[in-house]
Structures are given as structure tokens and as C-alpha cells.
Image 1 (cartoon, rainbow, N blue to C red):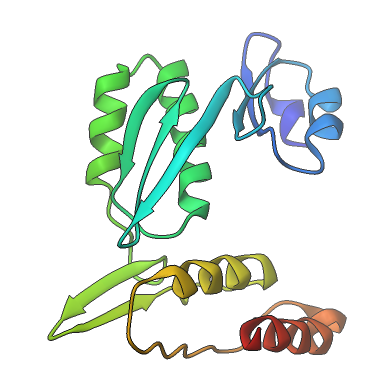
Image 2 (image 1 turned 180 degrees about the vertical axis):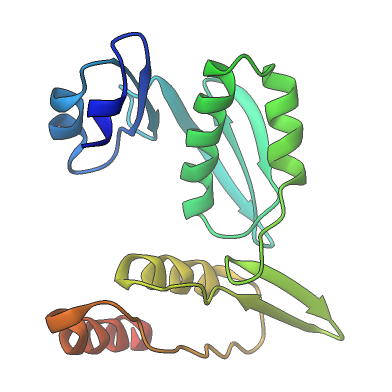
Length: 172
């Protein structure tokens, strides 16, 4: 339905790694550009490295560093880079913005102090975002980790199964 509001001269910026990429691309009546790790992505992400929760990577050969935690934010950075460039923002300015980016409270916001690192990733969680948060959490260097998880709302009839499945994922 979103594509109905985009004219033929507009752009659809789509995730190349998504299972529904081809379906989405086939529905677009405008120009399509893609981002992701796929070799066919217009804005290809490669060389991802993590150090203390910060990520360094390349987008079409341009070195980037991300100022937020969570590997899923590398993909978000790919989308931001694509949109920025399509809007005429210089690659150097995009690189600076990604390096300076800070998470908002509830979205992978990191608080540090007295030997403790707290990651608040509590905003409107769903099974996919919870798995991504747990994956990022498990890679942080720490002698001890404690995850405080709450309910995932708005799952309807799938709620019990989704919570049970996520509990097993967290245990693993």
C-alpha cells in the first residue's frame, strides 16, 4: 500500500536480505534501490567488525563506524546511508552522522558507570527485536550479564508461543 503513494520518479529503499524482498520489489511502481549484506544490494554492507559493542563496516567500500550498539543497527545504517545519498547528502556527512549517532531511551541505549554497562532496549519489543537484543547482549564483553525481559505486547493469539520460544532462545 505504501508504494501506491510513490510516483514512478520516486524510490523504494528495500532490505535486500529480507525474505520478502522480491515480492516487495515486484510491487514497486517506482525505482528500487536496496541495502544489506547481499552481493546484489545497491548499498552493500561488508566487513562488519565489532569491538566493545561498536561496529565498523563498509558500505560500497566506504568505511563506517556506528555510534550505537546492536548488529541490527548496521543494517539500519545501510538504509540511512541509502536514503541520505538519494537525498543528496555527501557520503562524508553521512559517515559523520552514523559515527555520532546515539540511541534514544528504550532503543539500545547504553549507560555506563562504575564497572556496569546497562543496555536499555525496552521499547515495544517483538520476537525479532528481542532476539536481536539478546544476540547483541551476548556479545558484550562482561564477567557477568543479567537480562531483564518484560512482556512483548500486541502479539494476540501468538503471545504464549512467542514468549515460550523466546524464553528457550534466551536460555540457549
